[in-house]
Image (cartoon, rainbow, N blue to C red):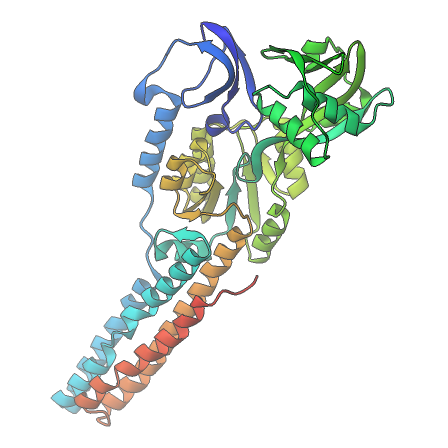
Length: 454
């Protein structure tokens, strides 16, 4: 960067939830957004050599390297069809009866084997679509049913992706509501993401925003304005020359939260802590996923160590912080190399390669980027984390129905094969008997059209 100063939202590329301040000499990414300020930059890489370009290339490579899933029905047919052919040959050799041999082949070649899997998959995919879940093929349900590793993005996936005021630390006896009201009034005309967080917190407390005059923004530091005859300053430690963080707020900074100091004239009124907050339904959703048999859950984020550690501790999961897109995809490949079936949940540009590489990639579609939605195999159209365990449960339920369909078909055909081989089932009756298992399979698969609570 050659000149200027700006507040940059680079969550889509790095996964950092909070905006970062950039000044002359800093390195900035293509495809990020300057929220406040102006920059003069020099491109050091173009096209495919940029970070975004490398992400696109990683997605393409991951899609090309993904192994084709061998479907359960294909494995079943691999054993079933040779047995039928052998039984037909044995019938002809022993009985020398062409009609009995033909009856064996006719009764065994029921289309119920071909219907056992796709009818169940179609029912599940259709029912999921009504719930706001787009599944790009039944094979992903089969893969999801045996998944044992769940990898998670943080910003915009587990969290709301927008900073919010989480704590108000009063100093010098000033009430928290007054601190929020004054800070929101001073921030009234600011475009900074943290200013919107302050205003939102004040509105939640039913605070009336007072008029602000002589507004002044200091890029990378904070703002200052006249409110009710007092100079209100809201900013970071550099803005207020605060060398020491109050003891009551030190623990919040250690959790990766951003601190905003609020001063009235020369008096420090308090400290506001801002952070990207966890979606409220996430803990219950992860508990449901664990009950469904997924034991290894890990957080992969480009955010800082403090923020990642605090969130991982709250959720009871492992974590890796400060990851770039190529490092996330390396984690996925490492798990796959060790024989695990990996599910990745994400929403940003930096998640796209890992989503494509995972055995099943799930994108938070409502807020996700286009490249993440394209790379993923399942898209959640609603920002509801309870849909994640619901998809896992749907996949397992679908495979139980598929196996039940195939078992029913196998038992029915065994009985038909025995009767045909002994001459009790002529070819005409064998042909008529083909329709009965089809009806049974469709009736069994129709159960998947009804949603079931976890």
